[in-house]
Length: 640
Image 1: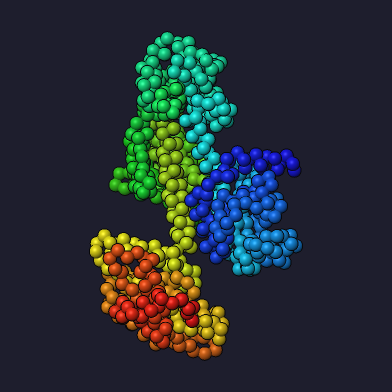
Image 2 (image 1 turned 180 degrees about the horizontal axis):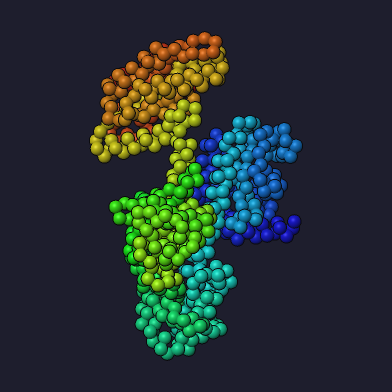
């Protein structure tokens, strides 16, 4: 157990995140968690040796608490989500000072944050409330998703730091011990200004066919001929320029290899070149492919490109490269049937309509590997199949694998036998075609999943859950847009704040369920009464706000008067009686140079004036400002 805890702490300290400033990428997650649970406190808590330290915190002033008091300690031990509906009734926490004293914890839910290897729990993403909560079960998956995102951000930040040190901080001896350098799939060396090696990684040592050590001269290691080729690039790098070039060499077996090389000069604080970072990537296989399939190798699809169009483009290019007449994609349907989805063939003929080709495509999918037949007539497995309209003679196909599952296949066929045996490079082209299609399908699926999740999170962050109206934050965002638009185009707009009269007595008399129903029905009246360009949101309790673009004071007053009348005329049905309600409105019209905060304040004062004047009425800028002056002179009383 001691060794496991030491390894866990080592993993935490290796992130170099303790005692760093709060970051938006974590604050965004705690804000979402607090809103999802309607909780006053949300934290990203990292459990250190003797304390829990908060990388992000909402609703809490302190940055750390003793580990001995930490609820999150239980998540570290159990490696599972910890849920405490009421801490005063939980024997583990009932005497905890954080429960008996400030911040008076009652409810707690914490999802574990895992290290990148998944072996250690580093802390939690947790939400805390000062009242018991029994209604949070549906939201726990959201908390786990947010915790997984926070874990990813911790690992990603660490990985970025490692790479930055690997590429730009290699003039320090400590870089020799960084595993990220030794395990890079590229050759890496740091070269002194006297053209001796300061640092080399394992890949570079293998590339150079010998045991290298710091201090050796490049001229001696590479030989005069190879050194003469790269010497001009070294001189350019020593002058302070980043240099890219391609070099040819041989591997340990004497086979030719190609490397893309980048020389990146490193500078001291005075701008002088003190060393060169040399990064080499083996591009031999890529160059061999490019020599035969240049068009395919240059293929690039935009992030918003259409899947069907991309796939058809890829099929056409590969078919031409292989001198094949027919090409197509077949995928399993939800019912398990094979269906042609994309085709490249004369007159739009689908490869799924060719019995031989369809049979061979099934073989590709069932085997999960490439199938290549130079002449199907000599293949006993297909010799008895009716050839169909286009007798197939040559065929090559590859599986489409997405998330380790074969979901279909891509096939190429011709009515003439293939000339000679399929070369390895041709099979690689077919396999590459399957990979291209799989990549596009995976990208499309990932984009759809991300878009769906983003829509869910956006709705959660911007919508009032009871009325499905925009919440206060979203309405203020839209209001600021209107302020900016009014300033830019010299237009005007109005804001109305509405409050249901005597709402507290509705709750007290008929219960909170009836109160909630009243809020929902009122929201529906407001939505149906305004224009499509207008916006209504719930900004708190029984209070709503309406944003009225390009609406002057008189138009805003008339619109809100109609809304007031609609509410007054509406009958709210309760389980025991019918209810009639009224509402008061304060309407303010934007003035040149006025901020959104000041405009909302004026509308709020006008609402108060409507309340003071007997309720169930609309007060706007059309009324005298004498009342507003009087209001601003005295303290504000609570509404009812």
